[in-house]
Length: 283
Image (cartoon, rainbow, N blue to C red; front, side):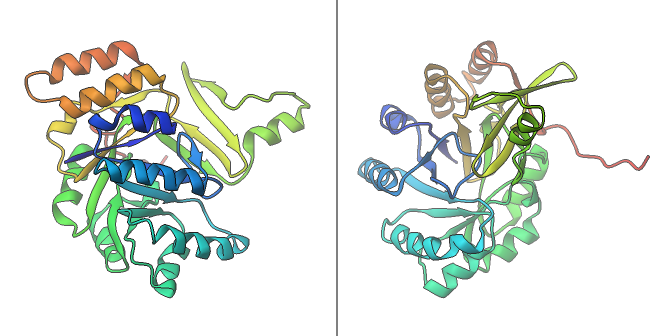
């Protein structure tokens, strides 16, 4: 099982080279749920760094596309196809159609967040070029393992970091500030609800809300059946993220409890939905 990171800078990619197997990076204006996004020039630089160090590269083009995006998207896909990377993350099915239309060789990663919850649908998209699937963070560890053991696709799942709760194309924070004539240029806003603090980002691509705690699945990472686990650097101090990445890369049965306690002591952590089934109740 490989460890891949979502980095927040090129420096972080260079500094942590010994402790990860690959990276997920987002293309600016075409990726969401990333700590940062990069220009195409930066992505080429990152790809060279990774390939020189035998690391895998996945590029996220995972926003909901609009008609005006398609011409540039076609050019970008052709350019990415020359980089010899491992995969392209997609949310919008336009990517599936364009891969076929443009005869793109680079495999796809089905990454529809909350929808990637069963192996039959994983296998459906696998038939259409999705060699990989990025599993939902709202399913249990048992469900994750069941999918990983039964799908034909290679699987990846979040094991560390703040989890995206929802994405809206509407500018929820900006609309609120405008309605009440409030001046606030913060990059991150906060919602305090039921004794928890949630981070909210309102960018050009819409609004994203994140979980109140950091998922720390280092203990579960020893038994998980997925092909990849993902460590997300969003809103994690650089020094702490570096320590966490090193711990995830060197963890084994002898040190896992020590590592878990160390991470828990540095951050407000929980186990997300790994042991929490989603149950719908009719009131």
